[in-house]
Image 1 (cartoon, rainbow, N blue to C red):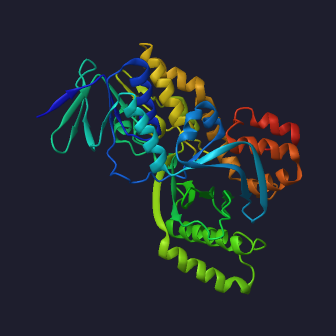
Image 2 (tube, rainbow, N blue to C red):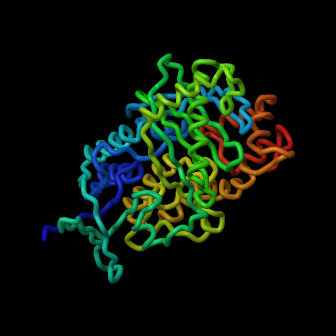
Length: 407
């Protein structure tokens, strides 16, 4: 049986795993094995949005093949439209291209990329190495094991415990062709009657449509119908800007909608994924590190419970772990992530129910769009929130200066 020993084993070659591998191999001369068990070219199910906050922290991300966005359209559950011009652009990537870019950087830094799906064996004690094994019997060992293999990580379940369905969100959607007239705005639309939102993220050669909502309230058939309504409305608006996003409202659109649906059914490619959405109490108790192990990104639960955005937290957690490890204090990672962004994510968990609840007799998201459309100060704060520059911790204080606000 072939066996090879490393300093660190990293399972999962998404943004968190690849970035950690690059940092460790480049900055500390660490012997790293990065395991990518996905079939070649298989994309991660993700909208692919990278906030301006992330782009400013790591400008080299702009070298990945993607599309920068300086404007976004937001829609209320009733279809009210709000146009936002961003002070700082964010980027939208195909996750195949984005992940490949980061993985290649890790390889160029000296990390060993191993394209194998592996299982792991628990140690008998903390003095033993971790062992990963392929189905063909190949084995790799190291004293440090990093799980960066997503929300369904079997390693995270074993080391930190499984998350209940109530602390998971579901994202699913379709990849579709760009409109023929080359008018493809970036859109976020809050769902009528559901907690969550739909998105349309144009990429270089296609559009990523999707819906994110909580797993415990998930109804695939109803939400899939809602997503198709959103997709058809998006393409309808490319042909008639005056039409409503969610409802055609006029018989003149029936033939147009039928044609659009037929075209999409012939071309759309479906995808789905789970996203962590931790409860407030879980942030206080769940650990992301222990003796000889650490969790990064979605595997650790590091995603915004309001928006589901996780790429920034994946990269930042990788950076914080690498810094801790190279300083000889890997357990210090637990303190660093809590100080670095843990409070922010915990606050988002506190806000989620109210964000998708009611306010003044209507969905809060409906009132938010209305108030932002009428008040420049609120619109500015919302723009900063979308860009990732405005955090949740001081959001209530900022909005309280502008208007009466329930957060």
